[in-house]
Length: 466
Image (spheres, helix red, strand yellow):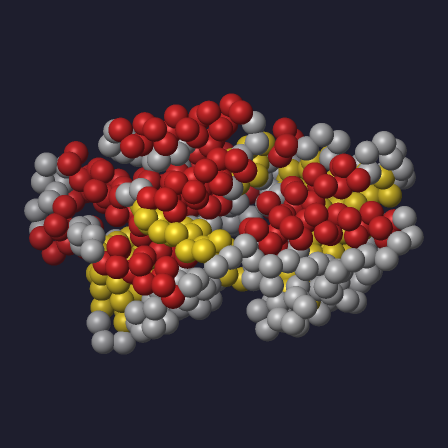
């Protein structure tokens, strides 16, 4: 069980950028207030800087460079590592679970920052594709790509070898394009290690349903990105291409079937499943409809930000769900909670997007700052500098600079990490058995939350697609 408190409790659900930034701002506002308790709940005990995942995949960064412990980032906030099982807004209670422990936490003010997950419901058979949203996803995909090269190096059947060396990314938005850029750089770097794999045998396909890649950014920069990627060896960019279905080792288009051992789904997101069960107003995407103050319309003690919220701008249109918005939303939300608890009126969130940045691998990138567009090496350098400054602690900053320097000087490492070792699988089965037994004793059932490991009859996000 989780301890109760007689203090006014501000409960934050989600340890992403928005959630941690909210806790940080609340700490400053309520410094010296013993009557207020700030609690943050996350299933992971670290904050992940997701834009750097692409470089973790390619080996340009160590995994510690894009993640840091939440406990070290916050001073007075109480941290609870647990999975959100459900929320009862009428009772002001959140149900939590962690291995060997289940219980409830009450709240006076609730902040929803539960984020999103890849939408596997868009394409039939998408359970056979990799996703790219978590640290485990990046490490798993990296090891899988290395394993394809290991197998291709000894494969004598040319048809099977071609399938091993075909990599398909479904979705041509920012995530798909940045992943393709880093994947081309990674493949270029590791190919010389494999004597019987010719770089010309490797195919990298990007399938985009729209008429151009990266429709969310300036057309000029999107065109630059398309030209750079299309000019790389083995890259095939296909626009106006709809994927009908996916099966193991195959992608079915309207008039073609592509045989590929590696399929990555980078198209579309949905809010955390817990959101779907909440008795709150939602938009067509399933996001919580919030007021301009970030307050939920039907429940004034519930606030929302980030990927799980639809927040209207001055023109009535919702703000895009970007990290830069989540960080600014966090500051306004914290200030509004402080205002409400002190009898003042909350203020609306108003923000103008500063721009967009992305990497194309091989020291090339693109960036837009208000009306200024930059591409090539300068944009790549600006992007790296920006995220370097966002990382807390000089130790991590120094580690990042060393990693990037070594990545420029040497080829990528081809060490393959097995995330499903025998010991890990056995321990996972024990935890699942204990959790199931606990649920039977309490007569309860699991609800709505995405977990790190699923029951044996379901797919697990951190397992190799079958």
